[in-house]
Amino acid sequence: MKWKAGKWILTASTSLLVSCAVPGQNGDGHDAIQKTLDSIGGFFGGPSNGAGGSPQSGKMVSINAANIIIDGPHPSDSRWQGKLISQTSLYHFFDSHPRRGPSDYWPRIAIRIDDYSETLVPATGGVEIKYMSQMPSSSQQNIARPIECIKFTAVIWKTPKQSERIENVVHCNADIRMNEATLSVGALTDYASLISPASMSSGQVRNFGPKSPSKLLPDYTQQDNRLYTTGRYLFGSIFTQLSYRGPLDGDPRLWFINLAQKSN
Image (cartoon, rainbow, N blue to C red; front, side, top):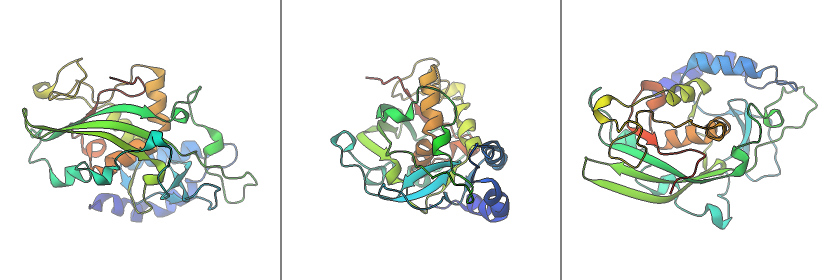
């Protein structure tokens, strides 16, 4: 998978990111990193290294100013048993099926969230300070987010009448790889505002398709917003592993049927 633009952004912006990617104890640096990432508005070459060391197996890194354990063993809990994205035809799907033009909307993918870790929907909104990366001189111990997962079902529409259904796909923070590109806060926010073109929209109907709902990402409840905000590192990784560039170029060929409100 080639993320040439993202790699260039990392090279051009390294000094700026390093100076503000790890907030202090009071979270004062969070606004700075968010503004920086929003201004970049796209991929950078990979997660920034956080202060190493964690009782969890894997590597602690900082993704959008939050400490995350990645690149470790997949959870053994039966709840999170299923197919990895890399074990399905979803992996690098959009690299294999690039758009031939702005009016090309095939193939397309619908995703239904079937399960997610409860810690991804905290009781209160906003940034959870205890998981934020700290300055190197801080006496506060770095704490990484717990192992968190999303389980989903996807339907790939190759044509209006030909589809492939993929069930029990599970993606956890441990499944994110060290060399994987990450999405900025700004890019993920941009995706949340994308709408389907009228020619392929089902309006307010949210189902597996083949037509997509008018808004690609539902955000009807506080729980929806919290899941997408807290779990943005997981959603961004899903996009990356599918090689989906919609948050960057407005490609409308991927939508979500639901978020926190589990759908049958």
